[in-house]
Amino acid sequence: MEKVKSSGSFTFNESWEEKKERALKIVKKLIEMYQRDRILHGDPFFTLIRCIISQRNRDEVTDRVSELLFNRYPTIHALANAKIEDVQKLLRENGVGLWKNKGKWIVECSRLILKKYGGKVPDSVEELVKLPGIGRKCANIVLAYGFGKQAIPVDTHVNRISKRLGLAPPKAPPEKVEEYLKELIPKELWIYVNHAMVDHGKTICRPISPKCNECPLKTLCPYAKGFISDEEIRKT
Ligand code: SF4
Image (cartoon, rainbow, N blue to C red; front, side, top):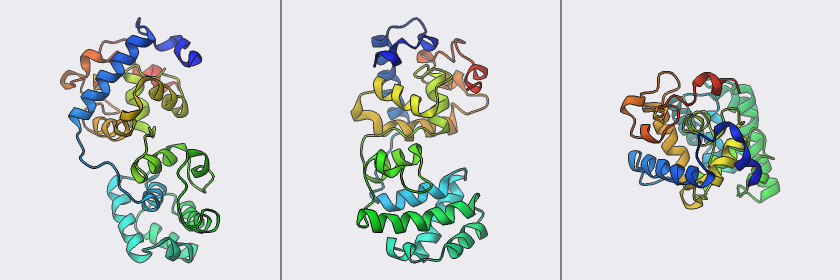
């Protein structure tokens, strides 16, 4: 990917091949640090609906409300036949932000998947982003965690940490960050990147005051060496 390789703002005096080697070391270390036996949730529809609920929500709320919703509407048919107002009410009463849109998207997604895809969640980004409320990040989450396919969802943690680690240019939008990561990291490891970076972002590489001194990645990290700052990243 010549365009990607020649983008000069994050070279850090390393060749593309050297960056690839460093990326591999980083990902292997992250996988070692944040082991997870089972990445696949195994239910694309549940993963998709959970992803809609999770947008700008805390994990605890998402987990609790997803369980409540699926207890009340256990199948895609039940959700497709639900009244939008009832789903909105459940979301609102349980503290879900953007409940109005999300309630509508959840019911409409269910109806569309039944009507257009025979009740099976589509397994490509191109089709998934056609569903209401599903952007590229959610589409990749469904692929990785619902289907177990190699995909890299770029959320706020993956975006920030990739840039601090010099694996994507500081000003790259999320879809470009995804492209850089896919170029730098071997495909068989893509599925681990999101969960490991999310865990790292919640514990060590936090948005404010990352704990670089105790981070096992510090010798591999341009941010820890002072080559890049949050100000440069935030200007995106
Ligand atoms: S060294 Fe600092 S900036 Fe780099 S990954 Fe670790 S915590 Fe994040």
